Image (tube, rainbow, N blue to C red):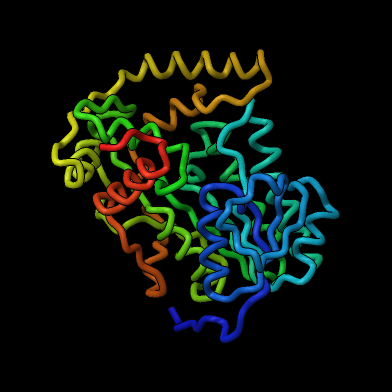
Length: 325
C-alpha cells in the first residue's frame, strides 16, 4: 500500500453523532488537532461541557435535508458517526442507520465533499442476526454505492468501551465484583477497543492517512480476541482479585429479549434487550477478521483491556456511576 500523508493544513470537517459516546470523544480529538469542525446536533442541551467551543453547531436530524446541507456546505471531509443502537423494530433501525446514512452521503455529494468516513460496526458482518446488524450492513452498502467521486472509508469497530459510556456500564459493574454475571458462552470470543483508540483511528481516516474504497476493522491487536475468562483476568489486574464468571443460559436471555421486543411494540419505546440483541450476545465469533486498520501502518491501538478497564473503572467511580472501591 502506498504511503499517504496527512493533510498539511487544518481540514473543514463535518461530523454527526457528537452527543453520542464515540462522537463526543472523536470531536475533541479532531478539535485538538486544529481542524475546523461543524457538528450536527438534535438537541444543544445534550452537548458535553467538553465540546469544543470553536465548533460550529447545526441543529437538526438525519432526516432534515436543509440541516444536512448546512452541515456539509463548507466541508472537505464528512465523518458520519450518528446511528441507533436500539429501536422499536427493524424498520426503525433501517430508517436511522440505513436511510439516515443515505441522506448524509447524498448531502455530502451535493456539496462536493472529497472524503466520507462512515462509522459502521462489526455487527454488519452478520446481517441475519438482528435488525440492528442488517441496518449496519445496509448502511455500508449505501456508502459504497452512493459515494460517487468521494473517497469513502468504512470503519467497523467491535465492542467499544471507555469513560462516559452508559451502554457498557453494566459490564464494568459486573466485572468489578467477585462474581460477574454475564451473557455469552464459554467458547465465545470477542474483540475489544477503547473509545480513545477508536477515535484516533477515525482521525487517521478523516485526515486521509488510509486508503479509500475499503471497509476496515479495528481492535486492540489482541490475537484471536478475548474469552470471558480472559476479560475477567484482565479486569482482575487492577482489582486485586479475579472475578469469577457466571454466564446466563441463552434460553433465559432469549426469553427476556422476546419480552423486550413485545414491550417495545406495546409502549412504542425502544428496548436495548430484544430477541435480536439476544442473538447478537450469544453469537460465537465477534473477533475482527477483515482488512485491519492497523495494517495500514498509520494507526495502532494503545490500550489492551486491562489498562482500558482500569481507566474506565476510575472514570465511573470518579463520576459517581459506580461506588468507590
